[in-house]
Length: 317
Image (cartoon, rainbow, N blue to C red; front, side, top):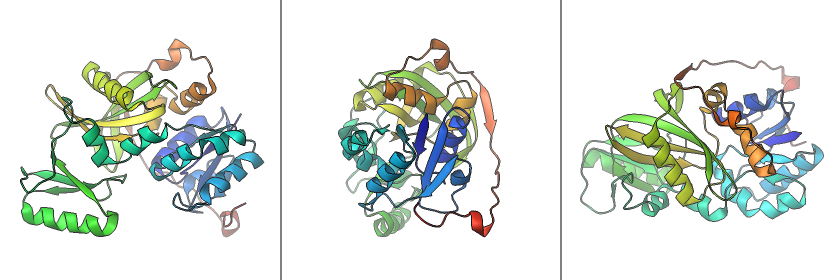
């Protein structure tokens, strides 16, 4: 089967490509001709940004040319656009692995996410008025990879952080600084929104993306992540970041897509990208495909891809 993967230059895209190689023919796309995943795939293409109205036509054209049956997006900014264009893809014989528009509109906006879960025991405290209990965290309502994240200890730092994000991202949220151990919880949900798998990953060392991590079974984290995914009616792959301190679990953010530590979950015995494909194609999933190896540790290192000028993709083919 041929599978189309977007975001070949990001950690999530590379993880998905590596997880599918040898099992599927992988066609990847990215806006950067030097995105490493383009050269780890069977075929790579340069495409337009998510805010370009021609992006969808690009992906459909590539998918039809390569006879791709499934589209696996890994770029947050693409998700809502792809969900809105679901029927266009399906008419072209391509199944986009994304949640519904309403679910994505909430999950990809931190302000709407926190408002949606207000009153839940795991909801973070969000400050909207002049009264703020320091320290607090400032972050854009829509961003990824730690961009625009500021820890503020006083009102002066808060003003600077808000001003910077106003220029770069337009809007921000101010939330409590949740202390504890950070977890990145992975899951796959059926088309009816019921999670079939939850794998908590403890982030040992992380600046943006995790460099060191551990797959850890934890009933309280799994219960909270299932509840969040179910209430949002997420479908296919998702990643929910939680902070745990003692008995308290706090929601940090929701990523309704694959994330950068997907490779650890795959190495633990659960191939998330392949499971997502099976879920959307309605294929049977064996119980052993949902069992992961507890306490498997990951430490990440850089790996280079070397290219001659003639090998660099420089046009949309």
